[in-house]
Length: 94
Image 1: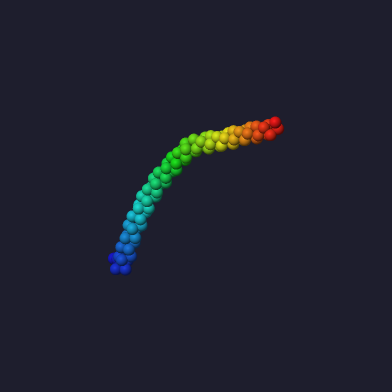
Image 2: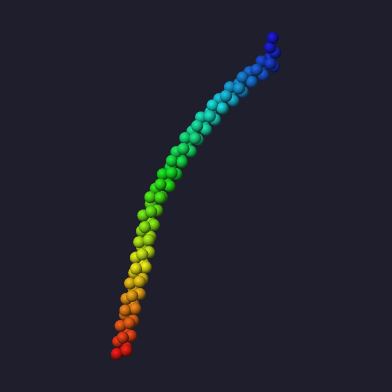
């Protein structure tokens, strides 16, 4: 028949086997949830990339427009100053 030591070892082996199977199932479910979470994070990052691309285009255009206006204003101011200086030098020459 079975000794008490063998019976205790058999019970310990059965309990450990049940615990390890349960742990394996739990790890499987955790990894499944991690996979879903990574998929959702990937979608969020793709959406953020699309949004930033959609925003960067108009901002770049606005920056170009402002730079053009600054350059145009500077050129207009330079022409105005040159006109004033030429008038001043013409009046001194008379």
